[in-house]
Image 1: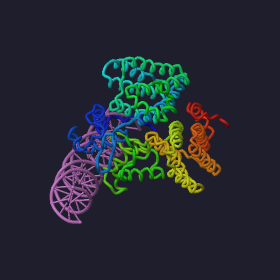
Image 2: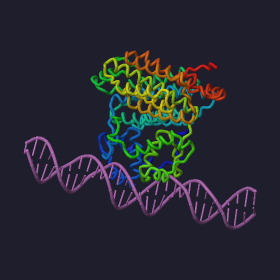
Image 3: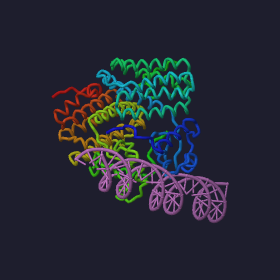
Image 4: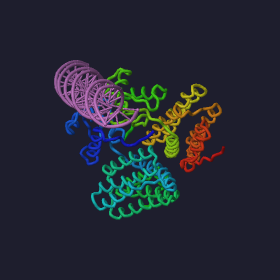
Length: 243
Length: 243
DNA sequence: TGCTCCAAAATTGTTAACAATTTACAATTA
DNA sequence: TAATTGTAAATTGTTAACAATTTTGGAGCA
């Protein structure tokens, strides 16, 4: 059972990429309807491939289908954010642990993750959304080191979710965070390369916890109080209300 | 962002259900090609809905798409099995922990899980595949108590995987296992209803570990030795080679 | 025999027309 | 006025024909 990439990108996937981009760029906003005819007019194809692209985006959770009533762009909320970070923390831990074992047997190919790290360094200080994107790409590459296809795929899905959150719930990446973020990334990678399972997993879970804390920062006190009532906050993230 | 069921089942979904069933029943075996025209002849629809159903099954991992070359039924292997159990263990733990919190606030609706438990009891002793199916349904209902839509969805996907494993890798359910299996199920459910997070999560992880052990039983010594070399075996399942 | 190339067959990819369903809105009725 | 019904417009769902691609199998040739 393999999950390797298809021999070459298909039209529907290219369309899905463009529509996804349009959603993330804000061309289509949460609640907006995606009408097949309009899309096929815009993108210059027939409705068939558009339909396929819409189904693809729906399976990512980016849009919702309603029978005979078309698709609308999904609107994320706080619960979604916490659930997504919880998934990334727990599945990521398994993948990283697996990667450490592979490293001990010298089977780890780090070309991709190194490339993504270089791209992330280059993206820092530039456009905030490009930076988030580079950040997510690096993390995905990190998790891919585990060579666990289902976990990788689920993880990739959560990356799309986070792109949506960043766009629509208004994450802010502040200057101080960037260097710390990259430092934490490198720390996890180094621990994997040392083959130290406990250290790598520990750094990873802390990294996610810190990400959650940073994610909350831009919100109002009322919203933060609301966030702290969520069970995931205590159980998974072990975050204390430090304010 | 909601993940509720669509207002009513669509044709493509019904087709996907039928094709999935045909794969699990063995009509289509791993490696077999699924040809759109053949399927549309068999099921009496045009190729459009069939294409949609094929894409759906591909996103479940049940079949693989090859550009311009059609779909083939996927063949699972041992690594897939371990990865799937690891996912069920870690995401299930989060969902169960969440369910405990909900229970403490009296927000837990147990009608579905109770119904599935009754169905499981009724299925015991009958057809082995029906029993596995009832077992998986109960576990899904258990995880749904967590009200975490993404985790529930990913968990459901792994249920499809396990159905495939059972069919194609030859799990055996023996009489002694059934009662123990149900007893472990009920224990987890009871712990959730007590709102005891640590107890419920502990029982759950042990339950999965036991499932992995039982899964290995029918295999030859050579295969088992191979299984024990997998890192997930030690890291996640903490299974000792007791033979 | 074993290799290359070409053509035909098989199969998926795309399109546009048609069917079915849902929504919107105006006309009708209590 | 408020509710209801009916009709037209908008939109998705389905189909069948056509296009593009890949596979298959054989002819020709060294």
